[in-house]
Image (tube, rainbow, N blue to C red; front, side, top):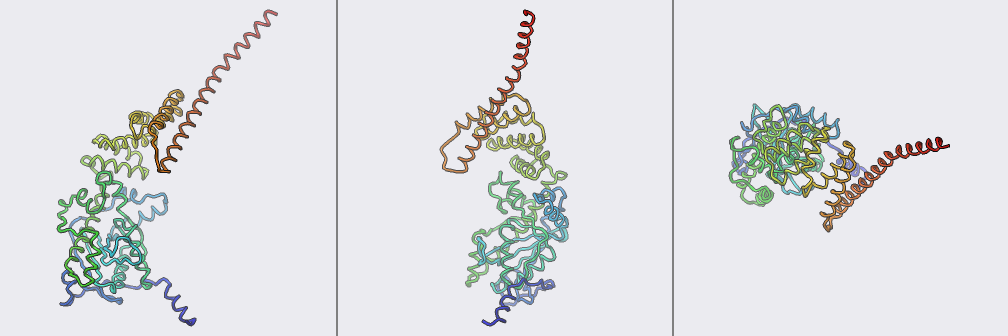
Length: 450
């Protein structure tokens, strides 16, 4: 290989410059294009070739204006500068792009293709949906070029598990083309994480279809899934089509993707209204959902509101297995707010709890030592905590559990030693004046007798 060939190959690895891309104009498919006619798709053309595009507009879910309170909570992270940038980008919903992909595999990797990319955005009070489809892998460049154009128009992605799966997969597909630059996002809002925090306690599974069924009230929105395609079968359905099989199952795949996009937009509206205390009515909210909301608020630093919502959850009748957790959360929240008496009362409720009894003893020992200066009571709760720890100790093969137990035992033992030392010092200090007075009295008697 000569020098010029080597430099040419190196040049091919350089990042490509973004290409200007006018919106694709759809043409009517040919009579022999069975797939396009079955899907109701037009043929999109650009200088990379062709792909199929399906465009629809839906009146539901309706547009939900982003709440400043909800955006603040959704964007808040430890990196304040990053949080501010993300929030600023999200303030304009005209720049949002909902995205969901259907792929040839669920594990990701360089051999996985996104054969269907679903996009949607707010338009005229409803939802505009566009789905880009590969009739063959050779159409990937054309599809990715069109996707890059859409992201350039609306660079704020809203996804469900997109930060972990969809967007990294698409980034790798862009990179592997070596000719289409990876689009730059202004922000990426992944709704899986708030959804998991808010509804996992009640639902267990927070798959989008489960949220649609149990949280979004699909019947009120006027839609329901019929003949739903099972997600795990979608890659095989596409491979069967590529091998010459019937294209009819692909209609169900596009319907599935379309419903996921609508559910994603509706989910944002639900989260938006739930997090905005000015709009949110929690009177009919399930107790476990209230508890999930309180934990989400607590992690975002909203201590006062988290305490109020957690109290509502307890009053609404939490299942027994979660009631002690809510009581523990309330106690910690009260402590953070500086309400030591309320925290102490809640810890007393947990003394006999099999899960939280030990931590309740530790917290009460701290309370009586630091705030009440009642060292005898502090010793009493420290000894009770050590006794509970000894009674609950079971043989374990989990190294982390062994370490946690040993660490807690050391903490309680050190506290007990410190408290005993303090009491001893206090007794010695209180007895010293009496000794001094008796010595003075003896000295005075001796002078008188002399």
